[in-house]
Length: 212
Image (cartoon, rainbow, N blue to C red):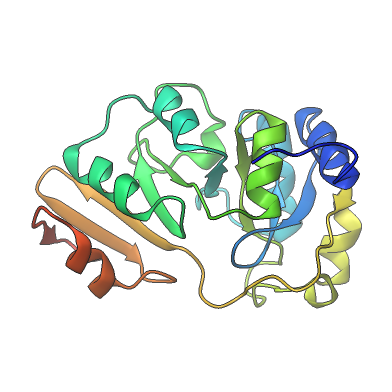
C-alpha cells in the first residue's frame, strides 16, 4: 500500500491535519467517516460534538495494518486471533483490550476498543499516513443515514470539519460487523457486512454464540 504525495496530495494533507489534532471526512470501504487521531482526546471530542453523539457510545477505529494492531494489542485470545486471520482485511470490527493509552472516548465500558483493518480504501491509506490509527465513525449527525457520497453529508457536518477527501461514491451497503471475542464464546454486537452465518461457518474452532 504505497502512497506518494504526487499521486494523492489530498490524503497527505488530511494526514497532516489528523496528526495536528484536526478532523477530516474520508471514505471507508463502506461509508464516509469522520477521522481523527484516537490518541488526542480533544480531537475525538470534536467528533462527538459534530455528530451530537453521547460520549457514552465509544467511537470505532480503523488501523492501517495487522502489525500495527499487534503492537498496540499484543495479547488476544484464540478466538480473536482466528477472527483476524480469517476476516482482515475486511469489514469486521473486533472489540479488543489495548495496552496503550487511547483517548477514553474510544474505549468502551469493558476497557476495550473496536478496531478493524478494512480492505484497501482511502480511510485505510489515511491511517497509514497518520500514524497507524484513525477514528472511523460515519460522517453524519446521530440518527441520520450513513452517507455513501459527499452530497449526502449534511451541511452542519461538512462545515464543522477541517478537510473533506471526496473520492466519489463509496461502496455503501452495510456497516462493518461488530463482534466481541470472549473466553467461552463470541458476542455479536452488530451484524453487518459479514453475516453471522459466514463468520460461524469459517471458524475452525467452534465458539458459543453470546449474541446481544
